[in-house]
Image (cartoon, rainbow over all chains, first blue to last red; front, side, top):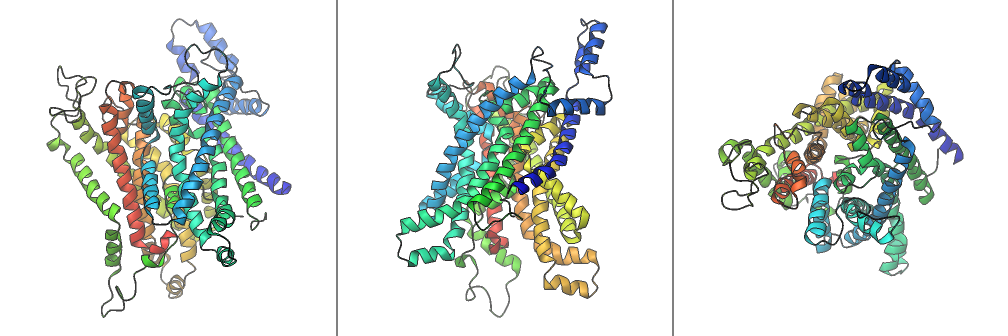
Length: 318
Length: 318
């Protein structure tokens, strides 16, 4: 197993280097601090030159890339161009924590509900429940995230006044307050969960239908086990494997995939930081955010593959 | 070892709605076959499609939506950018079916005109992605070798990243225009289909009829176009119709984030919702009507895709 992990990491490194180069070129393409400096006539030319030299912007791009890469690998993420020269890492760190909290809570709830819905839909195939659940999933796949987010805000914040519209704390809130923090999680979490429940319930249904055809299910039935036991002990266990690994992959993806949800609810996570730095041309932050997203995707893909092998004894590492 | 499927967009829906085949889906021998005259394949397909009630309803709705966008000039009571003096934020009513916006433009007319761009983008992205994906998939699967392993490693890596983040970066680099939105979505969109087609070609090229054709000295181009392609038509058509839904949602998301078609010059359903976000508390109709247009169109496209899957090949369900 350890050898498998090491080999996977070794294969991944050149891919990561290639992606980092692409990201660096794109980020520098999007943001040009040199251009922004020339826009402001009040900056004296000497200060401009000093700034450009300090950032190393006058050097060839591959030198800039290698310097950045060296710093990144050693944990030096640089300084924000926009936010008064703040260190990048603390900004990214708090965004990452916010996003992971939202993602993990939402995925856990979606997984639970999705597995229940999918199992019932599979066991009672073609029943009213199955038809309604299928229709619900089709609708969920057809609603853009920004729209469901806006509608949730309209109904639960504006009309009913139950929940806050945006942010993670109420204005004027000092320090940590569990109730306030959870209240701010409900709407963005629901917007995300509506989609995830649809995905997981469909996966679970398909997986469960396949499992129910298997020989060992017939064996379990013919042993005289109760139907509830057959389904819960023998069926769900096996059918869960692809769904759980899918959820593991989702944790990695969602670190970068919550862009729209975080934007609608002004939730200060990785997605919002990504958009802000993209529009502000703050490339040190943009680079750090995208690289961390890419890393988390690769790590969670590896975790998913390992999880697959641990859960399913039929799979062995080659 | 096998990894769980991790495609995004269309194949996700494909996998999520997959069903194992059941006996009643297959045409029984008594009812449709072994008669004096064989029933042509397209007739069988059409019959199976018509049996999918939601798909048939969706086709009718889509025709209405497309026609009302095409003939927006005749149907719309006002122009796309026409400002009606003194009619700001009029709620939906007899004069203005969907109300008016913040500068006094008729929302109903704008939804009709906006449909032109949204539908055109959705269909062109789906068709271009379908063509590129088919070509790459066939070449990669049939010829194999180094090109194949490069292409598959490339798409595997690209598809494992959060697609929205990639799309946003590309859109930001290219700039805002209808053409660029189509280009960006196509750059990402062809990959899932290419992988599915490749897998199918790998299986097909070992089949006897392909071997027979090759043994008879049929030129490779003809083997590809006459023996492989017809067997892929079902798969491609299903993918294209599901991809329309994905592309319409992606276009609207880009426009919502201010990275799609510029709202100042051209209305699309996405940028109509995006520019009205701030008015959600005062003028819900500016969000709800273009939003509903997106959802209904995407839902119909998804149902048509589902119906086509049933129609072309009941065994595709597994």
